[in-house]
Image (spheres, one colour):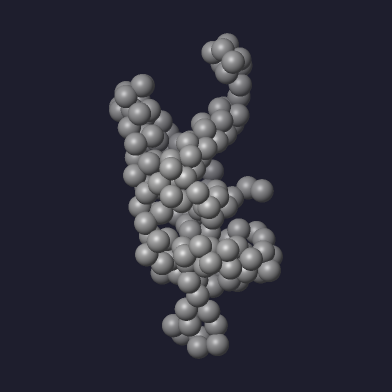
Length: 157
C-alpha cells in the first residue's frame, strides 16, 4: 500500500491499524522471548487482575465473556505458569486469580517492548509530536467519558 491509500482512511481506521501493528509486533517479540503462548486476549485479562488479582466473575464482567470461558482461559494460563488461583482474602469459599512470577515477567517484557515501539515512533515523528498526540487522545477519552477514566481498556469483540 502507498501513502495515498492510508491518507484516505478515517481516523478510527488509522487508530485501529496502528493498534493492530503494535499488538502484532508486541506478540512477535514476546514469542521471541519465550512467551509464544500468550495471546492478545490474555493481555486484557492481565490488565484486569493487576495488581492484586480478580475473581472469575470480575474477569467475566470485564471481558464480557462467560464464566466458563474465563475458567478455560485461566486453566490454560495456569497450566502455562502465568497465573494461579488463590483463596480469596475475604471470602474463604472463593478464589482469586493472581499473576505468578512468570506472569509478572511477561508483563515487564510487554512494558519494555511497548516503550521501545513508542521510542521508535518518537524517532520517526519527534517526541514532542508523540506527546501532543498522547495528550490529545487523553483529552478526547476524558471528554467522551464525561470526566471518568478507567485504567482498564475493555476489549471490543
